[in-house]
Length: 145
Figure 1 (cartoon, rainbow, N blue to C red):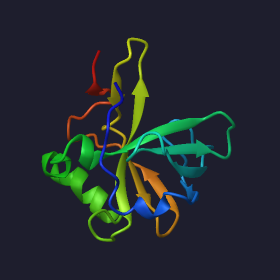
Figure 2 (figure 1 turned 135 degrees about the horizontal axis):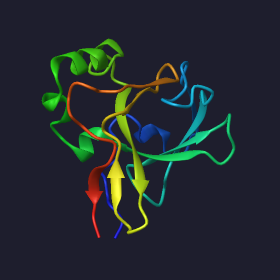
Figure 3 (figure 1 turned 135 degrees about the vertical axis):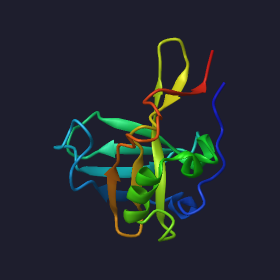
Figure 4 (figure 1 turned 90 degrees about the vertical axis):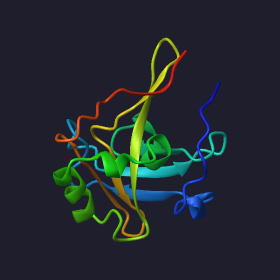
């Protein structure tokens, strides 16, 4: 059974276009992975594919955090929320919070809510943040078998 998410509000105009995003500091643990192509997954509505342009074969499926945990921002510690606001979340329309998804051997799907991605689609840049004060993990259950 595939999880279904509603169409992202501000990314819906990317349905036929590919967009590039630069992570100036790379991803956590992989600072050399800086340039990515963002693609809409037509067979999985509401999800995106983040494909590395620096390292062939590196791809991440992304889900909008607000679809996974609707009150996610309200549950964050004040310091973590302030970090996201400083990156433009809630301040600019095309800045969104996305989580990487993992499919495990048993078929379960988890989301990394400890280190979500702040994507600024208007500016074409992104940042992975680590929300250490809020108690979220890297394997938040989304779909269990």
